[in-house]
Length: 378
Image 1 (cartoon, one colour):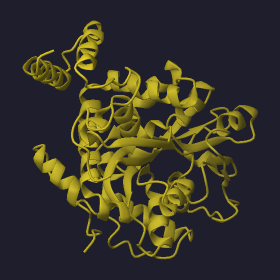
Image 2 (cartoon, helix red, strand yellow):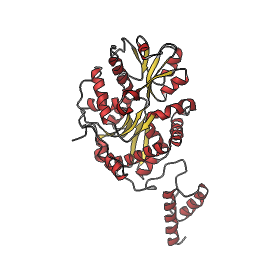
Image 3 (cartoon, one colour):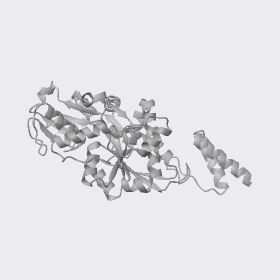
Image 4 (tube, one colour):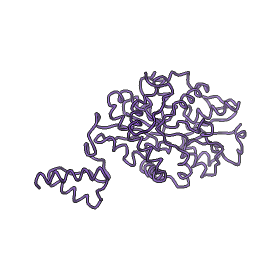
């Protein structure tokens, strides 16, 4: 093939890729034409694009991203499934790792095997405090809401009926555990935060185990995130309280995006690209809720081997709001609750946030900047 023809072919393919206009049926012909001109083979349709195929490689060849296979991590699920984050990274590839608990994700970040993570506020606070502010920064919000108190309606009909009952939370000191202990305190009841014993028995139970424990009657209810809450409802439970009703404007942070301070310092361009991807993902989720729900479920199926039943995901999805705003004031409140429950000592959270790159991305997208509630890095 003449050189000018090869150049025209290359340019046309690149343009078509950017605009998403190349039909699947035409791909073999285009790939064959490029190969015959000495450009080499292309990745298969289910494989990641090779370095430089979607854009220039950034300062790191890869970025390692952690998340939970929970609907409250919808930004991660959809952003990864739809390739919206990878698109912003260009030739820098994503390596993912799914976690089931916040402490293990914090350990991975501390140990250098993770760069960026989606995580709840309590693990982020604990990780920041235990490292004396040296290991992480919160760089964006991700989700609000998606937490409910579900009970056995045969045993519990009103909130006052919780006294003397066994109620599960996912883990001692996790975000839902702290919220429930605070709610109990505001009722004037007492519970030992270490053992969970008191006027209400707080049973720390892994979300994977909670539905079986509920069906067997070993717990009377649970204060849990989605999709566990809707799973309990499908098993005969009833929603007694939606945590959003306890918060001003019905908003509270359930998932943040954190980054290793070392990675942020060495690769700010990569972090900015990830944030550009999450901002676009959240916009796409909010504009296309049904498609986004299906996308999140497809990612859950890919991770676990099985999608959520419609009876679970359909009622769970509307209760979760994806957001770029970290809702920093609510994290501050959650920290105060943990102190009041004697789960942690009074922390100095100054510097836990660095929203510089997020606000840069938001400004470029014509969106309003967000606040760190006075807890930003100085």
